[in-house]
Amino acid sequence: MRAYVLERYGGPEGARLADVAAPEPGPREILVDVRAAGLNPVDFKFRQGMLRPIYRPPLPVVLGNELAGAVMAVGSGVTRFEVGDRVFARLGKERGGAFAERACVAEEHAAPMPRDLDFATAAAVPLAGLTALQALRDELGVGPGRKVLISGGAGGVGGFAIQIAKWLGAHVTTTASPRGAALVRALGADAVIDYTAGGLSHTTERFDAGFDLIGGTTLDEMFGVMKPGTKIVSVAALPEPQTALRDLGGRRLLAALFWMASFGIRARARRANVRYRYLFMHPSGAELAELGGLIEQGKLRVVVDRTFPFDRIAEALAYLEGGRAKGKVVVTM
Image 1 (cartoon, one colour):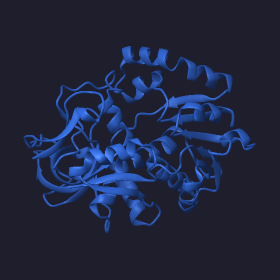
Image 2 (spheres, helix red, strand yellow; image 1 turned 60 degrees about the vertical axis):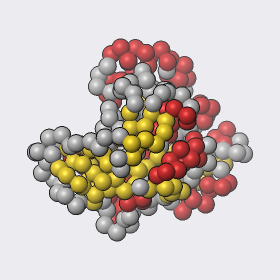
Image 3 (cartoon, helix red, strand yellow; image 1 turned 60 degrees about the horizontal axis):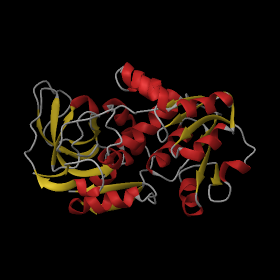
Image 4 (tube, one colour; image 1 turned 45 degrees about the vertical axis):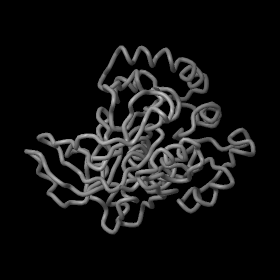
């Protein structure tokens, strides 16, 4: 089968399309005929080697973290799916493999695709949608009446985050460029701050919860506009010790490394009387099915910026890495 394979860490030249052996499903796995795969920043960060302290699989390895397709075979013990079922999934962090014509998925990580959704649109949901849901509901406890600040609302995760925060009953403020302002307002944002014209430095609003999708100076500015004692969850800055202990299997040595790496950010958070948490989302078929239900009910819209054919996946990744996508980027098989 054809797959996009990482052969060495670094630039785009370290990965290529290649013929590899098709996988076989394990006892609690389904084999999926991949029809589309979503692209995410974690894909090019993994290629660059930025995640080697966390995951270091032997190379070569098939890249890709989320997909949509049809079940081709089921392993022994699988009870929730049958051959022919349309599914979408965020694959397990330790394996990847979505950028291929076939992929094995743990049964508990997959969910039935929403009715009337095509494969390309469905493939754009799992990673970004689950990240937003877990950050806002599980980590930040967003609920009715809370004022939530989301940086980078026009991106893949941001688009889901705005809608999920509104579904949870929050008042949502987000940052966007003039080019992205119309999109984030259409997704439900109550207020939009133009980050090209001073950004958060000009706002007098104070927020109950923050979801950081940008990092850097934007995160520093977010510390200054939060109410005392509140919390910011980031997926764009630096991991901190709880990331290793709660999200990555209680790895204490890694927690020590993250303690040192994130010292500056945590110090700035303490000075602002704000709690800081970096989140590595976890795959969940149950939560993905919940998102599918919101899509079927018309409460969650999926925004796809561009779709590329699989043989142009390198171009698709370069486009995503350029940072201009509004919504998700997808390849179709």
